[in-house]
Each structure stands twice: as C-alpha cells, then as structure tokens.
Length: 127
Image (cartoon, rainbow, N blue to C red):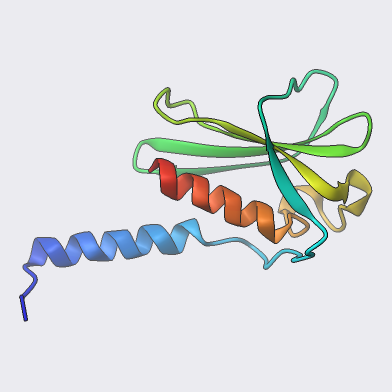
C-alpha cells in the first residue's frame, strides 16, 4: 500500500474541505419533483427584480448565483463569475413562481433542491 507524504495528505484535506464548503447551505431546501430547472440561452435582467444573490469564493475565483423575478412572476437564474475563463449559465425555474417564496427571501431556505444541485455541479465543473 503506497504511503502518502505530508504534501499529499494536505492536498487531500484541502480537496475534502473544498467539497464540504461547496455543499454547505443554510438549510435543506424544498425537494419538490414538480419543480425543476431548464437551461436557457440568456435573459435580460432589465425590468426584473432580484430576489436572491449568493457568492462563493474558492482561492481567487468567485462564483455567483442570482435569482430574478420577472413581471410574469416566473423565476430566472444566472450562474456567473467575474473570471473570463468561467462559463456562465442561465436557467428558468419551472413549477415555481415568486409567490412560492416563503420565509426570508435572502436567507435562501426556499431555493429548490434541484437548483442547489445545479449550482454545486457548475462550481465543481468550472473549478
């Protein structure tokens, strides 16, 4: 069985800590199978109201998620970063309207599980 030197152990620990931080959310979030996300090409935030924002920093790279409410009450999401090498993504949340937001908007306990998984997956893919 190969032995790990100190540097390898530290790298493995850092990777484990990175994953643990990536999976951290303040709450479980609703897991309703009728709510899902569909990737869209792009949306213009003009005329929309931001209902949630989150940023996660790993090293020098920042990953952001913003959720917007349109005039038609539909929810749109953007994953983005200031880093030019990171691909942004946009989604619409199907099966959820802004009226389904309960509790504090900015605490994020209403954010559907499917969106949390997509955000965590995006960060894992990009970082």
